[in-house]
Length: 382
Image (cartoon, rainbow, N blue to C red; front, side):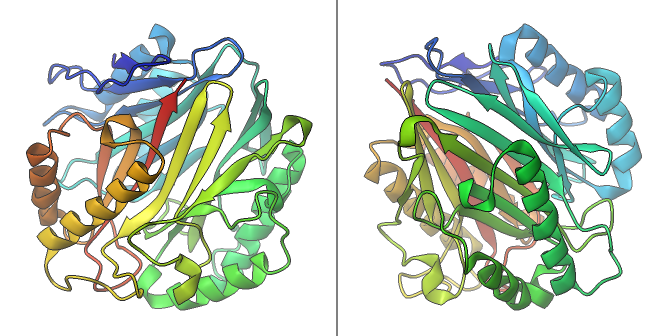
């Protein structure tokens, strides 16, 4: 289900019935580029986990493509139930899975699933430690790699040491896939107890990045959020990397018109990165929250105003690239307090964006006074 974006058109995702709420956007259908998609499935009220994955399986069978990576937001207490339902519906897990406790905001065991897919291209899998941790595919312009579910194995080490081990495993996975850290354009870091050791995380990340000569000339886009993992590790990591053909620029950094660069206050990431193909442009917006241009938290204690400013900031980034919220293909919202989802629901309704493909998660943002954060992707073709 969902709607197909074709060159020269821009359409909202199709509004579907409550029993078929999955949304898919197929990106780049021209034969010269990979038909990438992101399929977002969120539970309907009271829907069993098994039914959610059956809907996802139907979406994939209908032509959404071969999974290249899966991001799963659910309660760790339901890990066995969710894993069984995923296996029963999709078969062997032959793709990277990044599972974090982005709990639902309504008490359901599963908040949602996002599946990155590609059609009409062979996909190579990379295994590390007995699990698939990366998928590699090519188009006319570049070789692409999606990495997920990378975490330290020595979970008794202090969090900074686990961070170093996670980076080591990420670089190993990239090397096995034929890439290096310098090829990375987007990362996800989910940190257990992020408020307790976020400063240490930033210190380790900045030190690790210090010697990297990024292919794009820019730090990657990124999301850093607080969430537990089923393994009990202090963090789990996902990434996207690409190597362009013919020496072309693989991606460009996109700044935020309404915020300062994140490195200005000690966070090593770009506000957004844009990938270009012969069929269009993919804009990857980092985790974004209510932050003043000088780096201070705005609207402390007021979740509704934090939601409004966050979406204004993202809207300005989209507009700077000739895009708008109609072009969003994937989004994840993070709430410090699950009850604050009502504020984003109101924003979506007031702006006619109820069809946005978004997973709502009860997670901890990287500052104790930030109540809301959003990351998203947007695509234009042609």
